[in-house]
Length: 211
Picture 1 (cartoon, helix red, strand yellow):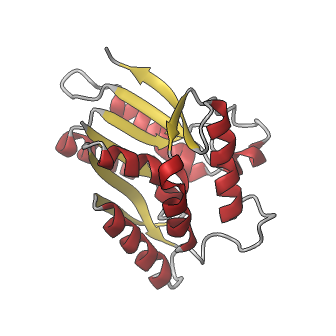
Picture 2: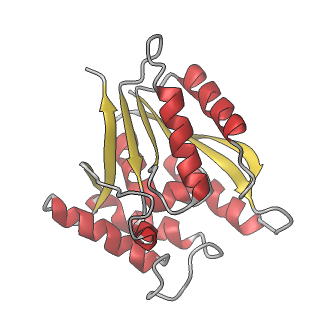
């Protein structure tokens, strides 16, 4: 099965779906990652790019970067980018951000993915999943609620995920009391693991399944 992960920024792929990608790859699926943004404009991004390259290398997947600056995305550009990847890669499963996410660029990608995956007549897309991180608790529901109904057991990959997360030293705060920290990522996966009686899980909301 071809599986396309669509995320806005370099680090989203690791925080949200490192374990899921790792598991899909182990199970013999073909995984591709589309990340829209390269980094912040006028800001050195060597460490971020280096971390991203190492993570993609560890996973052994094909990654495509849209090359946009963070906070500069437009719906027209994002829809074109997603549409091109769907037409070329022809995924059966698409995974992206939640429409209820705190970050406006995350919500933009989610909405564009919804638009691009609805035209499924001549395409192989059979499922669409959306996901959010622990930071989503900051929304206090003003963008709606992320209600996961799919939980991917990543227990065997959690230590590997935390090592990957730690590469993004410039993106995640060292303060473990911060909701964006690596410790908070682990607790989020632990919380959702408890939902299905496993140690750690990454949560998703399945938007549709074409049978």
